[in-house]
Amino acid sequence: MGGHRPDRVRRQRPSIAGSPTLFTRAKPSTLDLTATQQVCRGGRTAGQLRQAIATVEATRAQTLAVETIVFQPVAQAYLDVLRD
Image (cartoon, rainbow, N blue to C red; front, side):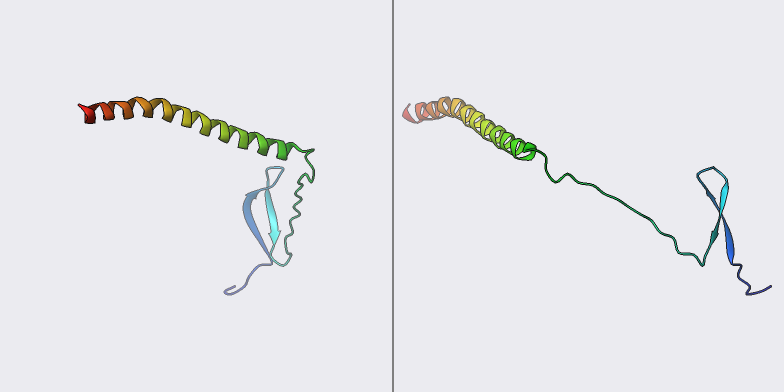
């Protein structure tokens, strides 16, 4: 019996029904995979891009406004110190 290899090997992997299955080494396995992707989204992508750009620009404008509000009193205080 030394060196004898069986044609079938019993593996303890559950099948769909929950019972162990029998695998044959000589048969190749195959797998089918299908993927789908929308080709046209009716302009939603372009609209979302424009919305994102507008959000970025609005946030930049808000940041500039805050910088201006903070910078003016700080600059004035600095100049007051230099003057006195």
